[in-house]
Each structure stands twice: as structure tokens, then as C-alpha cells.
Length: 150
Image 1: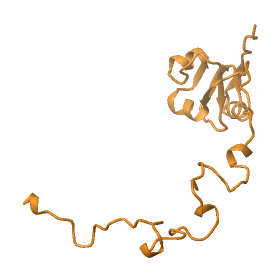
Image 2: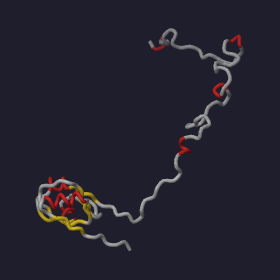
Image 3: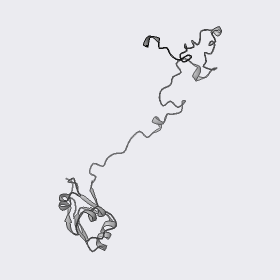
Image 4: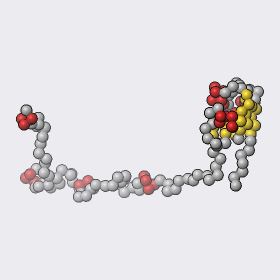
């Protein structure tokens, strides 16, 4: 019956009322030890406090970098992805976009260093390794310059 429920014997104790005199068993230093920062009133310190040393947050550099306003951002297409999804042939960035290898309208850059199929690619940029791999496979990469920024 609910009205007879009680906590287990010894599980509930009254709190010790410290700093109520030596005869009460918690007087003088009241369990805080002797002297020092921890024994004082208002001893709580702010988050990140490092004992007077300059905190980590304040030791960090104050300024971040900056984004180049006219940086050229390319959409990447790898030779391994082209080899697995495309038949050998001639492709430009529009054809790659139509086939789903490129999603945005950003200029296309080809990366990679191994390919077996023969591709003739017309893109805006390619790595040295990609150019060499395509040439070794019997294809070629033609680089089309980006339009100059106005």
C-alpha cells in the first residue's frame, strides 16, 4: 500500500550543517581545509579560468583569414568516376553536366592519374596527372579559358 512505503533503512540522511560551532562537529574551517583559494567565500571561478595564467581563449590569434573575393572555384570530376560512368568518346563540360557528373554551373576541373578508356575532353582546368593519364590512354584534354572577371 502506498501510504506504507518508506525509503530503505540508512538511505536518507540529514545534511550536515557545517560552520555552526566546534561542538556541532563542523566548526572552524567547516570542512574546507586550511587557507588557500578554495577555503574562501565566493570561491567559484569562471569557466576557463587557469589560475591567473592567460587563458587559452585569450592566447589564440585574434583574426581569422579571409576569403579571396575572386577565387576560381571549380567543380571536380575524377577520371575514375568518368571511366566507370561514361563510354569512351568526346565530352565537354556541358555534356558532363547532362550526364550528371557535374551538378553546378561552376567551371570543371579534371583530376586523377589513371584511366584506360580513350576520352577527348574539353574542360576549364585539369591536373598534370590527369593530362598525362588521358594522353597515355590515347585521348586528349583541351583547356578552355575562363571568362575574365569584370
